[in-house]
Length: 118
Image 1 (tube, rainbow, N blue to C red):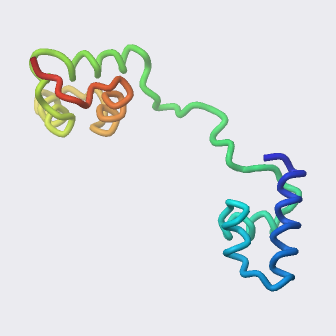
Image 2 (cartoon, rainbow, N blue to C red):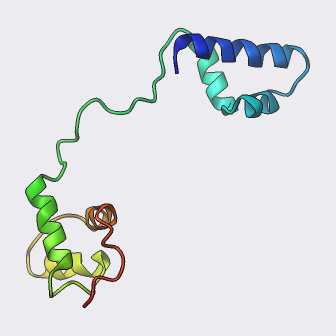
């Protein structure tokens, strides 16, 4: 959202509130939360802060590690087990490939969370 649009939204909500409208209802009509309106009012000249991180996390799995997780989860031994079962079995063997959450995330992205059995 550009600063001009934000400025227009701030003016519209302020005008509505000054005219006797409830701030919550004015924000609902414009499709922003009252908290967003309040935050924008505190610093009207700042840009949109919702663009996310600028760099990748240092602990992001490599392509090889992602492929290994998918190989393990879809392999013969673990094809009928959930990540909740796979990770502890690997830990008992002294192997750490990825966290349970990473297993779930990668399986979901590859649409493998459905039945992986025969």
